[in-house]
Length: 300
Image 1 (cartoon, rainbow, N blue to C red):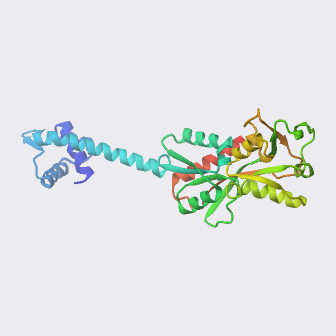
Image 2 (image 1 turned 90 degrees about the vertical axis):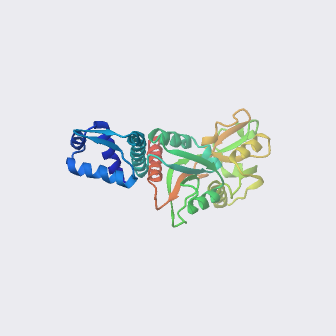
């Protein structure tokens, strides 16, 4: 039994006439009659009561016509859904974020923009450390990740710079540095104790800071390492030291900490990346990548 037989059967049932059903379907009457008989033979039941110049549903046919309509509806819906899936309009996306990426203002803009463009798509978001996200990408457990390092060293991955963030010093609100009028340079910063985002969680931030310090010829006095940038800000607020964080975090805890600019050239802006597999097998992932790039370009 195929869908064509069901469509023929429903047309005859609704028209109550082989002639009108044949006209509706755009086929000749004899082949239509033969297809109906083939369907009855296949099912082993009589679907119609045939009378001179009239054909009517049998009790069995009356029961079966609703079943046939349901099957045809389901088939039409399935065809529509598979086309939408093929176009990347529906499906499920798994997105990974580092803790610092989750705080970036561009992240919710991207997720909101994708939902507005593809409202039927389902999106799950998970937060993890950088290298766990890279492993999850390579193993196919997530489809895209937002992080602060490039994935160029991995031949199967591709990353795009979405924006670059200025870095700022964060100090206790009553710290003497808050009275400094000039942007902070390394000679002044290196006099302080530092709380830093540990490398396993934020290698982009960690390496950027240590490379800048090494280029200056200095050394950080690290008194604490944290797994989340918000943890660094909390420790700074508690007077444990100072830290350096992306400027996008300067809205956090303004009553207990101060965010101070760095001197020009002290630290390069921090790239914010989206990473994914080079081979995009799913249209929905390709749509997410394109949408993310478009939104980040608009955001400047």
